[in-house]
Image 1 (cartoon, rainbow, N blue to C red):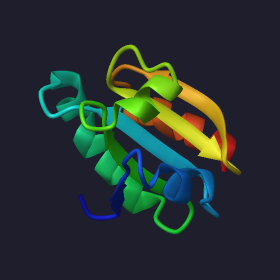
Image 2: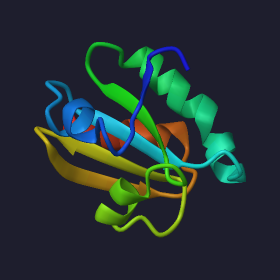
Image 3: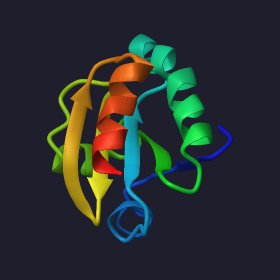
Length: 107
């Protein structure tokens, strides 16, 4: 977890809503197989977009308020924020190419 930040209910406002950079929030859980599958892809994206995109992980089991606030029903769910607004949502383990497409659109 090199360039990724840990996002929680308590720091969500500061890390995501008030961020000067666009933010990718990876909502998942330790026990979730697809979440573990997408983990290395998210880490690569965090490294490649360092300084242009903030990447964070949020554990839905420990941070149910935020997950509920954004209507997360299945994991992994990737939420993309820009200027404090939710601009894109991707549900399920996606290819790196698909995620980069979404990122390039919001940068």
